[in-house]
Amino acid sequence: MKPKNLAIYALAVITLLCLYTTTEASRSDALFPVRVQGKWGYIDKTGKLDIQPQFVGAKPFYEGLAQVKVGDKWGYIDPNGKMIIDPQFEYNRPFSTGLAGIREEKGFGYINKRGKIVVRPFFANGTSFSDGYAAVGTPSCCGGKWIYIDRKGLMIPNLFFLQGNKFSEGLAAVKLKGWGYIDTNGKYVIKSQFEAANDFSHGLASTAYRVGHNQPGKYGFIDKTGKWVIQPTFERAGTFSEGLARIRINDLWGYINTAGDIVISPQFENANEFSDGLAPVKINGKWGYVNKAGKIVIEPNLDRVYSYSNGLALVQVDNQFSYIDKTGKVVWQYED
Image 1 (cartoon, rainbow, N blue to C red):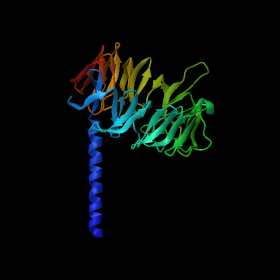
Image 2 (cartoon, helix red, strand yellow):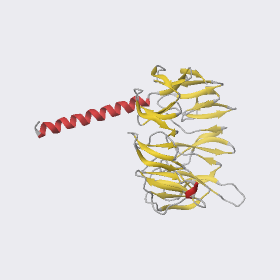
Image 3 (cartoon, rainbow, N blue to C red):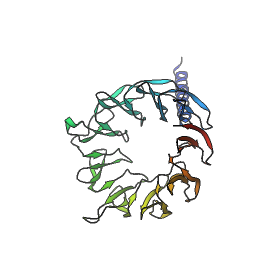
Image 4 (cartoon, helix red, strand yellow):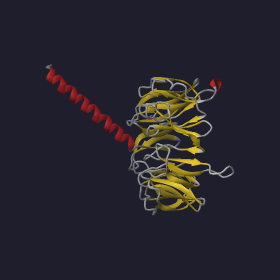
């Protein structure tokens, strides 16, 4: 084959592989785990069974693979239901940037999408990988401290914390005496000073700062230099999602925008982050969903709710679980 034709052939193969990978990932996004007569399978967005019930346990797809349980071990399947990584783990996590946390008898480690162990199971626990690093807890025999490792399992030198979060937007919240933030070089960018600290999103992170010795900390939002962008005036605050963050004032939850303006007044007993344009809220002991204008779109008559993902949300009333679409229409039901 001539070099020119070989190059064209190689480009065609790469294009087809990219299209296949994109299609597979897109297809996996539209599959949802369900239980039928004690076994787990997957439905599509219309409620049609796509992967027949055959597993002891099943969890959502991430990065084209889903965690499934066979017997007492966990493995991973692709969107066609094919076992890609054999069930062999006591516990496993979703994939994130191509790696997933797993637990074996010896401890917690990480695998790649071929099922190969890339960070040997040694640790007590760990976060997902992001920005090239994960926070892991060392065993009690090694002091029980949290450290940061790269994708080969190599440690960022001379960094030991009481607790560490995953990196988000280039920074990770870490705790010594108080919470601060480090960058991926292990350098403190925001000094240890906060009572609580959450992940960065939309360039902001909610943190709590104690204003008096006997007073609980108030939450506000800082930028990546540690400067207060939204002053600490809230009893609690979450992370920004889809441009809004939940905040609590006088024991009631509402939402603010990135400028700190209250866009949905505090009126809910509880509230979660926005996803797919809707957020779960609790009113009079029951859960429903609101849109970004604060309008109730799914009436609060649910006992338990999860966030929307790709157009569906899992909800519970008594012992009955249902997937509902964004109009509240039930597309699938099963008993616990």
